[in-house]
Image (cartoon, rainbow, N blue to C red; front, side, top):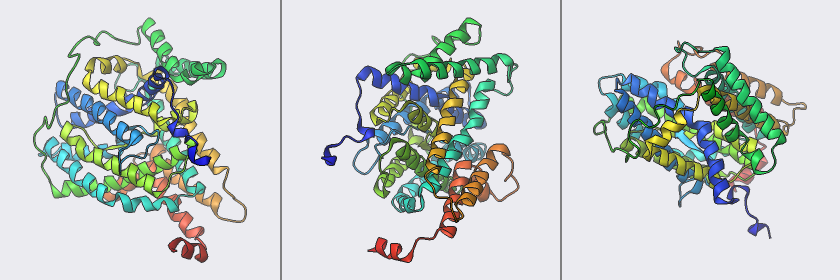
Length: 441
């Protein structure tokens, strides 16, 4: 009888609701996905038009990667509600490579070479699941939420620190209003209305922003309506060994973050995530990362903010996320739709982000509530790991004078918390020998 039970992630909804909820996922991560190509393109000295091409490419590749991860093909894809996008963890390293004499062709070569390395080690990396009991997963999920809060705060302040209205009461007030709308709709809404609370709040927030002159849609009709993704628009990849090695360290971070994301979404959805499933998820991650430079994009990884949306709405279907992947793919082919979403004011995204990212942290705390803290070191392990995870958040320059490889591994609060939690748990909570023997058998 249990064999016929539909897993939570396999739940199907009517087409209209599926795409409406999928659009929520797109709006939640849109600001995060366009930032890396903006930063890397600027570092490479590209024109506005070429940076626009990088943004369109990022949307297109993210859509393909999300479809592969959520729907899956034999050997690739975890088949979980996990949205993929250009990873922030790779930005600083890629900026350094792009600023050099080789430019984007060397960036492309470094991504391809390092992603193929990641593809080879993915099955072995998946075995780390045995080191992720609730003590570790709860800590990592909590830090994922905490590490995203500065993103929500920056969005609420306006998104651009150089803008005249950065941090203005108007911007923060608009974010607070959007947050209030999310809370109100979540409280009074029923059924589908409640589950669309984030989307409706952002729509209402944008309309109010337009009414007071804080949203500008004048540029929506400027430019192409339809455009096919370019292929190697900036030249053939150049394979520089030093650049590949520096990106190989980033790949280890990406594998760690995606593993944490897979464990987190599995915990929230309430579905088993075993070694095979993690391996399929990591292979999908690395395959799309290796192919992304061919379409002028960058390494892919799981987007943590969308895990918060799954937790908040209770919509656990991977087909909803796949619908979001279709929308992302269309945005990559239809620049006009991308310009519409880009016109949503950043404070509106920030207001929604506060509750979304907070929900991720709350989910981690719920997992930590299952842990036994009596007569053991578990409380110290959690405290230390969360502290290491929040150091890069509260003091971003903490590791600036450390060796490059240290900065790469610890600059991400998620990977830092994950590494510390795993190491301390292995040190203070070793498995009984009998269990280890049984595992080998």
